[in-house]
Length: 137
Length: 143
Image (tube, rainbow over all chains, first blue to last red; front, top):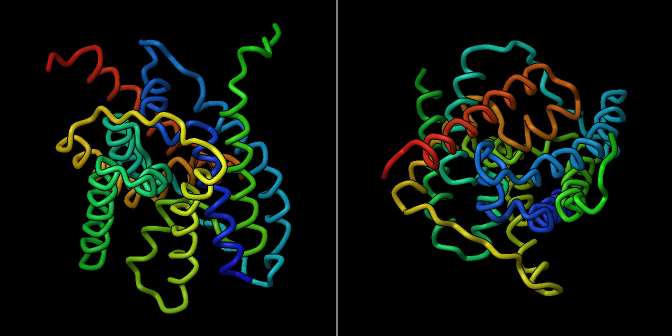
């Protein structure tokens, strides 16, 4: 059942990325281009997602276990530190270069696009190097 | 002030609701945060019993393309970034999201949904960095 939910969630998430237009990096870049021909689409995507997400988290935060009896793994860290800010800065620069973030990167790879695969492999490498440095540190 | 309904991008809002539904499913049934960088990045820890659902979720994301294509035509996808810049961007996105513990979904959707000050800070920073980067590339850089 846990795996079925994971599959369903992945599929619905991916369909949402496609329907919203966020699978197209050009639309994401148009949102980030505030001094150019600005496209508000991404804001509507986040608004829709947060509207449903807020209800889900309000329900989840009242529980210690999920409907399937698993523990609710909601992050407990609250500190806004240098790692969070530097990491977000680095991510934002990469996002601004190509208009692709991790979700759309995986969905795009599913279209068989070579461009997307180049991005995805580099992303996995970046994550791997982070993990490696973490492991030693 | 009023909102002109003709100007609302319904596809975008509808897609957002679906993303929210996916977040709700994974959270309420599996107790997990649907942050893509976290789900993918967690694979590197290779913790027993914590790999299967991650791989299956990622397969779902990939499978969504085939499911969409079964019913509709894929929307236009335009990638104009060259391979070198794509690789650089991918690397920064991979490293940055792990260092910063989240991306557009983990901080931007899930974090803001639970009003986490940490995620609001992260989202503000990566949005501003994105705005700045696009500004520099499109309106300042000469190459």
